[in-house]
Image (cartoon, rainbow, N blue to C red; front, side):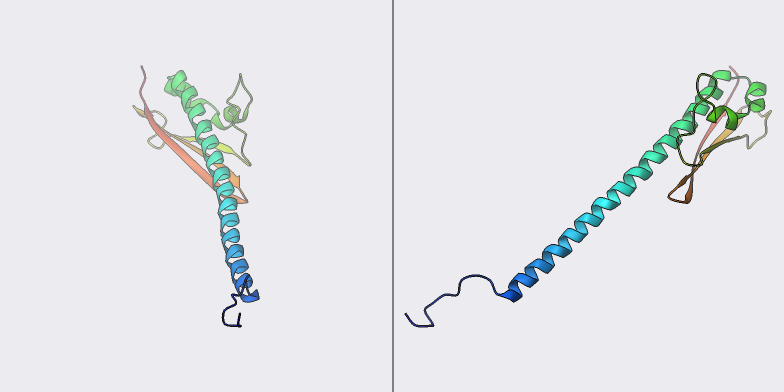
Amino acid sequence: MTDKDTKKLGFTLLELMIGTAVLIIALVGLISAYIGCFALNESARNLTIAVNDAQCVMEEIRDMNIPLNITSQDWPAWAIADPPGGGGCNKLDNETVTVTYPSGAIAEPLEILITVNWTEKNRPRSTQLATLLSER
């Protein structure tokens, strides 16, 4: 056999370095996507808790169904009080629940706006629910 007939077996150092670089780039991309999914999961969980808290307050308002009782209630205090005397809405960082009546406290139907504010990773977040309520 001559030198031309022999086949070289294995990889060169340059081929191994290029393959390793491609593998590292792919792994870094996958890890950053994985970390991003955790952040989105936490944000979605917090938003779900906030919407549930606003719905809890809205259901309590709906059960009262008397505008004078609704507008005179201290909803922020009710929201953070533990059940059975309150809603227990204090699961998020710096969570506050605010109930406002944009068209006035004696309007018919009564317009109700419930705002939930909280802090997520040192950034303020909020969500709102709005409804109209008429006396039955």
